[in-house]
Length: 344
Image (cartoon, rainbow, N blue to C red; front, side, top):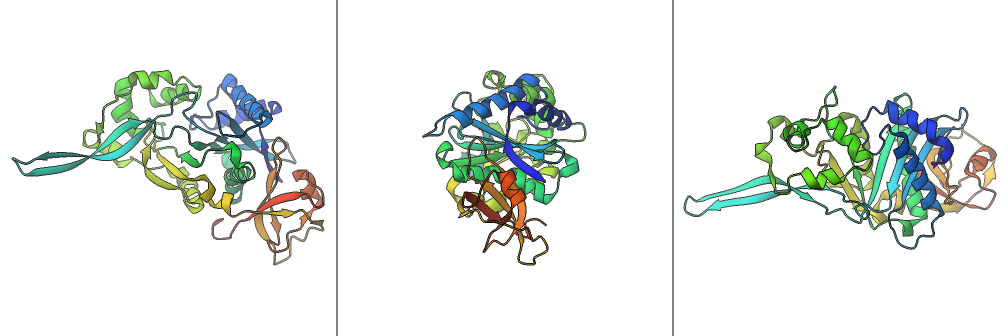
C-alpha cells in the first residue's frame, strides 16, 4: 500500500533517487545532496514550530510503498513565498500605444517582471516515478497535502498557487528561454533552472530585464508556449482546475509555464473533506457501496494519508489501515471521496 507522510532524515537516499530520475525537470528537486538535506531539515524544523501565522515554513511529503519501503514520489507546500528571498513572475498585460494624429490605437501584449505573489502559499515539488504514475497515485500525492492544509490552516497563507512546468523539447530546451532568458544569462535553461533550485536567486534580480518585454518581439515558437504547461503536466493542470485553481496571466520567468492560483479556503479538497471519528472493523473491499477515498489522520509530525475503499456515508476502516494511519477507535480522521470521473 502507498502512504503519504512527512519527509524525514532517513529518506535522503530515496529522495536522491527521485531527484536523479526527475532529470532536472523540477526546479525545487535538483540532484544536489545539500539542497535535498535542506528540504528535509526545513520540513522537520517546520513541523516542530508552534505557528500562529504563516511564515517561511516549508513542508515536504513522500509517497512510500509500505511493503518495500521505497519512495515513489514527493510533493511539498511552502507556507509563504517571497519572504526570505525574492519570488519573481512575469505578469502578462496589454500595453496601449496610440496616436491621435495617425488615428492608430494598438494594444500590445507585454510581460512585466513582478513579485505580485509575495506572501502567498505555494504547492511545489510534485514528482512521481513514471512506473507509478496512475490517476489514483497522482491524486494521493497532490491532494493529501491539501488535506494537511485543511487540518492546519493557521500554518498557510490565504492564497495558494501552483507553478506548472512550461514546454520544453526532447533535449530539455525551452523555446521561451531561448528567445528571451538566454540573451541575459548566457547559460542554458537546465543550468539556470538548477541554480534557481539550489537558491542561487540573486542573479535573477541582477540580470533579468526590468522593463516590459513586448510579446511580438519574441520568436513565434516562444509566443506559442506562453502560459502552456508541459504536455505531461496536463493531467496536473486538470486536477488543479477541478480543485478550483485558475490561470490569471502569470507565467514562470524561465519556461513561461502557467501559475495557477486559488483562495486557500475555497480549494475543494480543503473545503469539502469531512472529519469523522474512526470506526475500525472488517475490510470489505468487494462491497458495491465502497468508493475510493483519501483518508488521513489529523496529526502534524505524524501526519499520514492514504487511499482506501470505504463507504463514505458510514465510513469504517480496517485494522491494517488504522495501523498505517496511526489511529485508534474514535480518533478523528479526515475523508475526501474520489469520484470515478476524476480518476479517469
